[in-house]
Image (cartoon, rainbow, N blue to C red; front, side, top):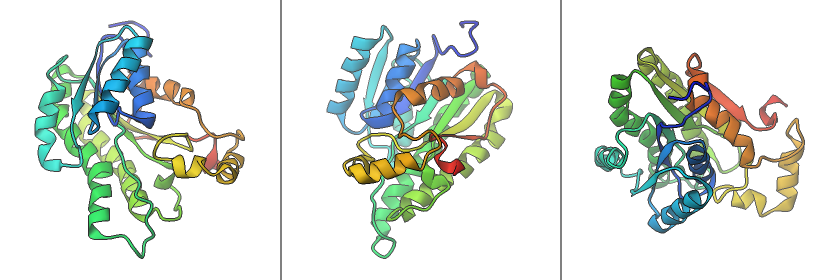
Length: 255
């Protein structure tokens, strides 16, 4: 491996939610940094578009697995598919997620289950299936995606907020269980970034400007802002960092 502590060259990385938004940007960033990347998502056409984008921008090997991670019974089979192109991953980034934006008075059991299964249960069970291979290597990275709603309550966010608050504790518990085997488990918590999931926010210029004003730096995020923190948590540079939630939010949660 490269002696650069921030290098992921030669590593195998799996990114769920690679078909759009933050997951797509992170999958491309890992490929650009020299990792072999397997993108996972349920929309095969979007995955193909990501793979074409990655091929145009990087020289890395990439592969795709079309699967619905919300189907928890299929996780073991999905994990097996993930391991086929390049071997079991060294880095697992769980970026797949959903935000139904339904008021607490109207959330149904189906809404709740959909959100909690994809945002909280799937990252755990996918990691559980892949961690034994990381243990065998004595090194691995599990990176979850938290949220501003890990800390803050937003309107129409009760199920999403519960799932993302759960991600913080899931990350700590993963660290307790697996870090002794060389597997660092951390979470990134993005602030407001323009993605498919956050389109209702950015489609309203007044709300987007209000959110930017609530940060310490005075603006909303760009995908470039996530690359440095991602490479830190994905690389040997974070060998002694585990069980943490890193907020990449321009200081939104500091105010």
